[in-house]
Length: 335
Image (cartoon, rainbow, N blue to C red; front, side):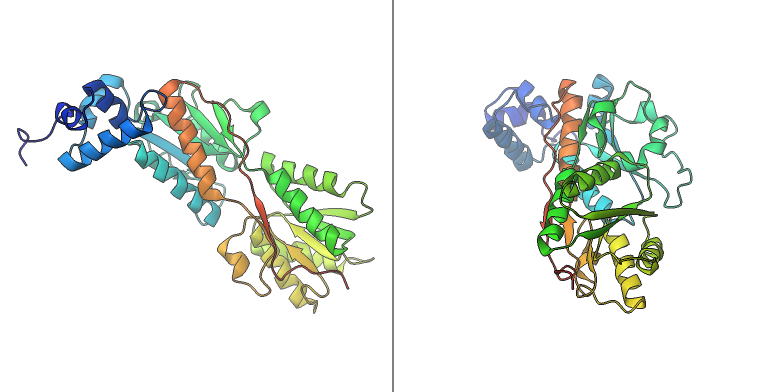
């Protein structure tokens, strides 16, 4: 098709029976609250039928927007963040935004800034608090920012989107208590992060007044670190814990390896729980009891919040995303 024959917004408006302004709102992703879902669908259907694509270059020159947002997460070797990206990218595509991914290096070292001039290249930023150490390169105070798993009371972001990790910790604690466990060790993430601090406080609160003994041991977020920490706990003098409650599925798998090395049966001699419900949790034997975190939903809500901020300048903080306990074979009543 030649440029002369290319459909215009006027053609789409005529086909859908709406004004050109309505076409502009829908194709620009700014129709929410201004145009009904029925009309927006009619405009999109008309655009698809005609093969219409907005002139992004011209629109960007008029608006000063690039229709590009940045997603900052830890390295995608963590399956949780890969799923989060999937949810965020789907919402971004629905609103005509491109997503540039900026993963923090797994070794904690500096990552290369993908932009020579971030302010000129980005409309907004969606960032995990687990990768906040690189945020300073992009947060100049003038660009919309939405944070994930971040303290809403002390965030400079336009809004935060959080998982209800406190409820997740309550669920797994109540599960272990109901089985009869009273000597519980928390294999906690050795990371200074709001989300892990919330988990620790929630676990302590859930066990308060139950007669349970709680010990906390910290470990780096790797399988080997989890194994070493679990071995230290299980070899320590005194009564052995009957349950290890882990902050991360990878730590829990390390604990499974430690138990086997010491000749302990899971769950007959020791119950082990995880957090995340990665594919790994159902790939080991016994399969892990764990807390399922809907990562795609977090990415979806985070990107939707950022799009809303870009369109209207503000957004209400959404309710925490619900999590759920998945009971599998790694937990049982203590011997």
